[in-house]
Length: 298
Image 1 (cartoon, rainbow, N blue to C red):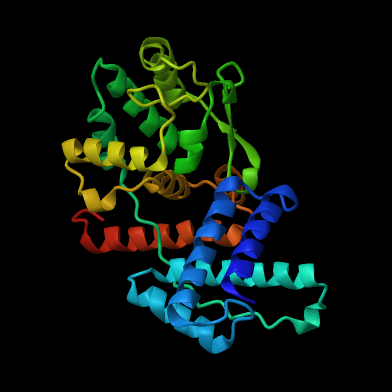
Image 2 (cartoon, one colour):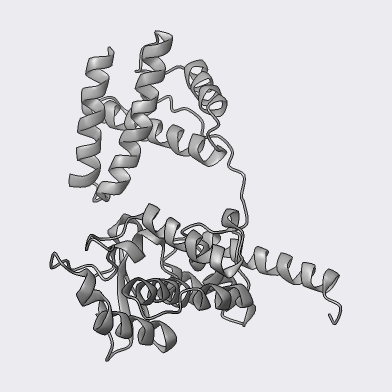
């Protein structure tokens, strides 16, 4: 298969993911990006993009590694390639016994970095102020930490997703799956204050999203990153420790440390597998061990 035909198949594959498999546009875009890398590699090295040999895939992974791509990124690229191969085989009507799928690289599991409770308080204190952006940023930290939302879920949150009476919040997670999480306490109070006192000044375009930029546009993931790092600098937290999922990871770890059971936490985080949730239990044990080793009154 030549490059032109392969790129055409890749475009059809991404449409298929959204229209027939119900994947989100964001997921389809990620697969498209990975496949573009594969096509560019094949073009640069004079290889046929389909069917790939094990040696071709191994060289592709080496190229990604040489470009400084993380193991998780390599894993995702090969996973996208495997899914695309299945799609091409399906379109050509070949049986599954014909498939020769590349092996996925072994993933290294990393424990999530978290902020301790004192650092969360400092981060919230760094957002204090009467200006609209102060109220917005404090509400972002309160909801991210208080409800355990992913960065994309924070950015995608709409006003109609908030139910102050029922004290619940509805969010759309990975695979466009909807889940409902508790929305009360400081999280609800800070959002109410932001909606009443700050958001009207920012909402110049009549947007439905809760969190808006100074120009009235919905926040993007990279905007969230910049907000956390700017406020973290004021709070005295190293920039390298602040990234969009830090609030979610801290939420999960602190709940486990205070005794929440794993199944309830799994539901609140929206994990399809409890294996994903269990990484926080491992991290919690590590944190307790470090506390016992170093705290003078442990």
